[in-house]
Length: 363
Length: 89
Image (cartoon, rainbow over all chains, first blue to last red; front, side, top):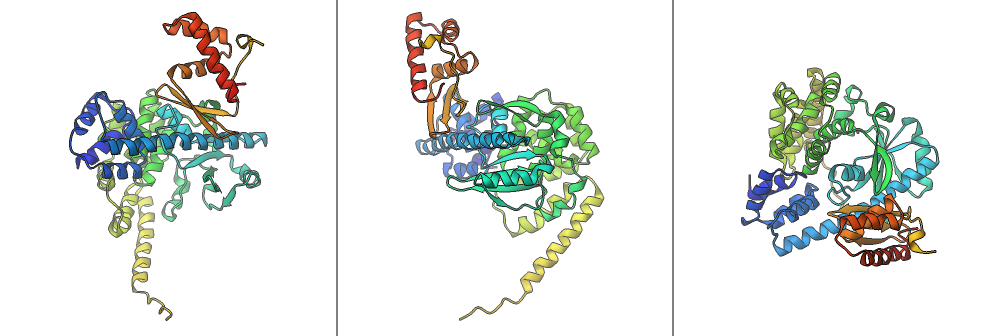
């Protein structure tokens, strides 16, 4: 691992322990390529967090140029996040006036809950969860409000406003199974509609206003599944899990284990927990460590994720490594076989395209 | 009406976040951003909770080493500015 990569992993922990702070401090005195660090921090959504952590370390300094660039990102994020949060509150009020229950989750809510403010977590879109029966009415209200509707066949609809751009995702299921591979397995997964989650909703603050959101346990399941589904390709998803364990030390692990076993999502969920343990040095309860150890594939999956943290995707990673990773994610042999057949079909299509005659270009 | 007799509260169109003891406020109707220093932020939080200058003054006197007259003057100055910018009602 390069010193730059080491620094990025240390900076991804929102609540670093004293040993991590000491390592960060030491690394900051070493020669570092800050253009690489900043580019990767942007890609992983941790520029603001990294800047804030370094600023908080006594005696730590950044080179002027790096300081300037990171400070700029930090200040911009606060304004952008406040603006988006204001819009989210406005939309929630708009729906509430029409008698529709909408629960904000991810984005600004996580920023406030897990990081204590709206500066340290970047988010590009806003997410709300509604009752499936309200889909059409919500669409009508948002379109009347000036949003453009983009059809989503699966579990959420996307609405967009331009200048300044706002992307609002209206979910009727909190986890989206967007890819064809995963959609087939959707019905076997954890139910995440509002009627399922509402008995455990919690009050929270958003931009100084009162609202409700999902329970930490539900959020933990959703976030780990979301990260695994996206190959943990952004470190800030790991930051969220690490922050969640720090902010909610009384998380009901027995309930989590029960759900994970019942819905057969052990690998999807424990992978995220194992990753924060191994790479962000977050302590896990023995109860969970024991569960992780009973799934040897999690170690292999973790190695695969690690090998992809800091490299660009290419043909090999996209079509060989990624499908193999997705197959391993599922607890049941039968589910892995479903994906295997799908992946074979994908390869046949790919090879077919390679040998397909290209139409002659016009002169 | 004297400021200290008024019940004050943040304008509902204002949303804010506190980063390292510094509040950043957005007034949504004008789209203007404001920031408050550490003491200003503490006052903002107390205004949200109590809304009465007398009560806030009492709490701040216990928290900070400051003369009562000086505190009263500073508090009224900040509150006037917040009112002037539409951040309080």
